[in-house]
Every structure is written in C-alpha cells, then in structure tokens.
Image (cartoon, rainbow, N blue to C red; front, side, top):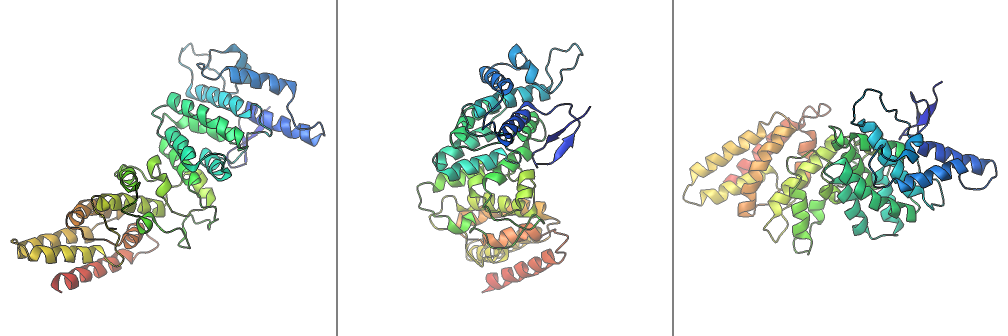
Length: 393
C-alpha cells in the first residue's frame, strides 16, 4: 500500500511506502494537540528523537539505533558504498533531532527553506544580522556534504532557540543534491529566500514595480566596508547568478516567493548580477561613485574618445574606441553584451569615466528578450548617437 507525504511546496507526493520520520513526528504532534492530549510527542517519537541526537556526528549507517527511522531503503547489491539519498537522510534525521530537542513546537515546517528560516532568524533579532549571515554564508560555501552538515549543526540550534522551523523534506533533497550538478539551484534558492523583501510579486516572476535602490546607487566610496563589499561583488565575475553567497546581501531583485523557493534564474536576477560585478570592477580605486546617471556606454565611450583625441594618438585612438563600441553594439545576446562590457569597463576605470548602471541593468535584462523585440535596436541607435554627440562636442 502506498501512502502520501508532504513536499516543500506543501503538496502531496506519492511513491513512498511511509512518510519520513520528521513528517511522522509533525503529524504525531498535531494529533496530540487535536485530540486534547496537549502538545507533545508519543513515546515512540521521543525515543527516536533521543537516538537521533546521539547520532549527530556519526557516520551514516554505523548507528543501529536509528536504522529503524530511515525510510530510504538500502539496496541489497553487495556494494559497501551507501546510496547518496541514504546518507542525506541520515544527516537530515540527525539535524532534525538536534533541532527538535526541547523545542516548544514541531520544527518540521513544510515550505520553509533554509534561506527563509535564516531570514526569519534575522528578523527575530535573537541574533545579530551579521552573525546570521556569517552562518548562512559559511553553509553555502561548504565544499562538500560533510562540511555543509558541520555548519548546519551550528546553525540549527540557533533556529530552535528563536522558534524557527524548517522543511526537512526539502532539506533532505538539498543535501542529496549538494555534491551533484544541482547544487547551484539549491544555492540560488537559499539566497533568493534570504533576500526576499517580503512583498509579493505577480506570478510572472519579474516585476518593474517599486523596489529598494540598487547597490550602486547607495554605495558610499568612503565607508569602512566599501573595499570588502566590492571584493565580494568581484568574486561573482563569471559565476552563475544567485549562487555566490558573498553577493547575497547586495541583491535587490524582486521576485514572487514561488520563484524564489524554486531558485529560479530570471532575466532580472541575471542582469543585476552582471551589473553588480561590473560596477565592482569599475568602482575599485576610485573615491567617487562610478555610477553616473545618464552616462550610457555610448556617452562613456565618447568621453574616452575626447580624452584620447587630446593625446598623442589622436584620431587613431578615437577610431579604436569607435570599433570597440561597435563590437559592443553588435552583441547578439545579453551574454555577448556582458562579455564586451567586461573588457570595456576597465578602460573606464583607468580614466575615471562613470557609467549609468541602472541603464546598463535594463540593457542586460532586455537585450535579447523575445517579449521586447525592439529593445536592442533602440539601445544601439541611442548609444551610437550618444557616442558621436559626446565625442564631437
């Protein structure tokens, strides 16, 4: 007989013969409350929770006392290596035991991802924001499953103390995926959940509505943390958007919570990621903000051309800049545009010419968007016009 079980989205999924232990424990808690027996667990659950806590730090499959609470079957194939799902379930079980210990409520909360849990922890003010971020980023930068679990063992007690729950079915799947090709999606979901502004957005996943000012608008060149912040942003160069934990505090992209929970990679997020890394490269070594409203790439190239024309190379330098801008303008898609911008921005950095990063983000977001088929053509015409006006003035 097949039963159903809860999934991270709160839906039911068939295929397992028995719910995970943390799901059984949550049902047990709710049953006790519903039947008027008061909040608490049955002796069966209490006994197994004790066994799970004793299994913390032990290798999967070595503790006989918790084998009975596993729901992932062990194949009878004669191999010594345990299946990844079995190892992940072992770690999820022991973390659940650690989390549930002395908690006043059931801690398995369907739909609450790790990023959402850490956001709730931060908002609870039980711990300093910097301390929460450090622990989440430490977990997100773990090199393998073993290191990740070690960080989670330090984070879970903080969630318990603040009364924050976690979806352990979801965590089990994320632990299973950690050492595989789906880690980036796990990371992106954590980061998007943690930076969720709490304002629902339309189901389309992207919204041009009111949002927090982007980082490059509020950046203060003389602040004590400026250097470290720019270094964190530069570390994201060439990496998949949303997967660089050091960049999470600087993202402002709004997105429907449903898309955040899935770790969706939207055009908005990709454009903001690229703009942030370009700005960080552009801003370094300068004591004034390199985000300059109105300075399109065409305007910036024109300013470079004017400076070059006054030098010894004269017309040759101007022609070289015009060719470089031409390569940028003929980019076939947003990825190629980003590639040309990565070689263009260092030239601006060298001479201290600013760039409008709001405009740049919009261009990266719309350049090859099939819903805006004329966007790239309009930008090309405007930037080319900006160049010739600025260079000749």
